[in-house]
Amino acid sequence: MYVTIINDCHDPLTMNRQVVRASTLFPNTNISTVAVNNYGDLEAAINIIDTIDAAMDEPGIILCNVAPRHGKAKKWPNGTPFGHVVYKNTDIFTTIDGLTLSLIHKYGLAEHVDVYDIPTVLE
Image (cartoon, rainbow, N blue to C red; front, side, top):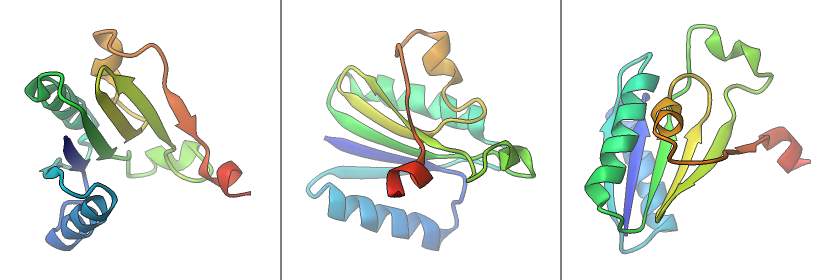
């Protein structure tokens, strides 16, 4: 099993924190990180597809946190929400705004996205 973390906050401390969290949640897995640039939602979409392809149908998890910045996330009261998509043996947990899931949609790799409303979940 593999875990891939795709993130637009890619300073070394942030990436280390995410790898440590993932390694405690998913022991004995291979963890890789991919840093994308600001406005990197399309770059994240490409990396999601590339990761799925490279995994060759082996089970894995993709964690993608690429949120639109510069005021674009203001359309959500609590920032860009997260969602969950399943493609074959891969669970994808990702921010849902912007173009991050555009290639999943374009290629018909998932029929639906479960969207998590964190404030409601915490009530």
